[in-house]
Length: 98
Image (cartoon, rainbow, N blue to C red; front, side):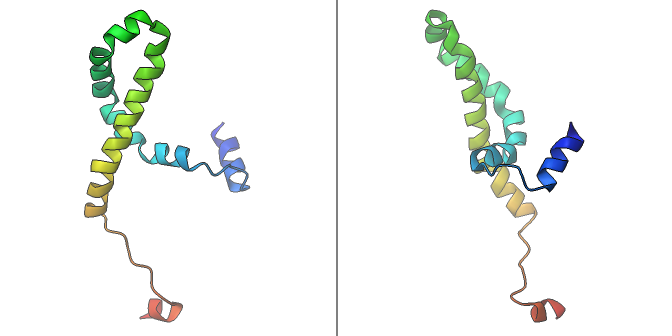
């Protein structure tokens, strides 16, 4: 499966979906905070999910993803930029030689 996915990517046939790219970038933050977000959502939305149990899973998944995206934008991205500042690209090949 990995070989096939890499072959498709290498051939340039993967779609460009910015929302999925952002979710992939934020995946570590989602991993770190989803448990807390889901626990909070369970407490906050208990009356709703008891009356409409079919709403529970999508609601909790959305809460975990949303919290991860917020954590990524508010914490992970700024901290990563602080620790690993972006390297400046030279203006021209001549500048790169210097």
